[in-house]
Amino acid sequence: ATDNGLTVDFTSALAAALAKDGSAVISNRLAGRDPAFRQHKQARITYVYDGVRKTITIKEHATFKIPFVVQNTDPVPDWEWRGNDILAWQPLTATLTTASGAVRRLAAEPSAAVAVNGAWSATFPVDWYTGGTAKREVEFTTLASWTAQSDPDIRFFSGTATYKKRVAYAPTKVGVRTILDLGEVKNFAAVTVNGKTFPVLWKPPYRVDITDALDAKADAFTLEVKVTNLWPNRLIGDDALPPDCEWKGSVRNGVKEIGVKEIPQWVKDGKRSPTGRHTFTTWRHWAKDESLLPSGLLGPVFIRTAEIAREGKAGL
Image 1 (cartoon, one colour):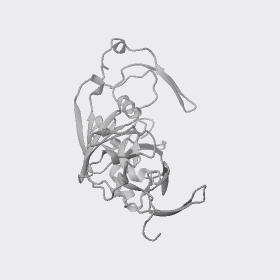
Image 2 (tube, helix red, strand yellow):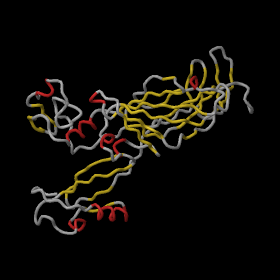
Image 3 (cartoon, helix red, strand yellow):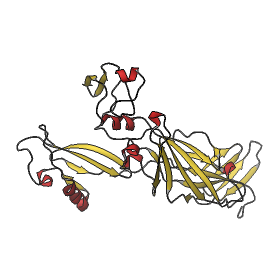
Image 4 (tube, helix red, strand yellow):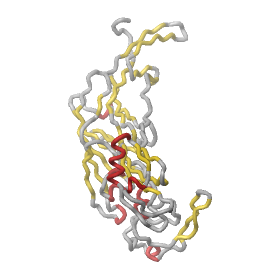
């Protein structure tokens, strides 16, 4: 793109270049011609990586390379105190010496974690802004950010979506704690197992002890996870629609100082936006050309077991 609005679509050429070594120099060669002789040009590239959609702008002659991103999840502890007991997440042996001098030799052998694979169904309330009850149900064959969806009602969704799944699992030992590990979540999660709802998880690690909700005689359980993201994605999506108010201000030193010029009449009347926008704010924090924030249940999801270390184990 250039300052005078000239654009060239070089999607296919860029994809072919990236297929070779994962990088490409943004130049006239990719465009197939010089769309604007002796003018500074830049490329606007939208791509999806690891389930996250991003849009970036790169100057002419700069090198574009999709970054290698590793999801950061909190490591599982080897063990932790649970009251006066040692709760072992990994196999361990331990020797405890009390204040009186008594010695206890303990051991635990919790089972390995089990991955929760397969498809998930997710339901989105797509007309929450009207007070309606219409919903959109999507099947995630693999967990990914909502922003990777082609449906704009989901890609720009801000609110709470509900994931449901029947999980095959049967406890293998008596007295073992079963932990549901959701992996990465953007941004809040409320877990319900067999109808029992647990406190909201609002920061890592997104793990919850679901032992008391399991049926010891069953070989599966019903899992529901309500995930709530942040508001920016809906604001970014709305900003791509026709404006429904006037703004004043500018960006100064990288800080947006843009506010609404006047509260529009449709807001005062308590009506919907005439342009179909879902939201209204008095300050323009987010614009249509900004990158969406990863949202949803991203995983990977595991069932982990943790065992109270006991005396009398073999080998002690």
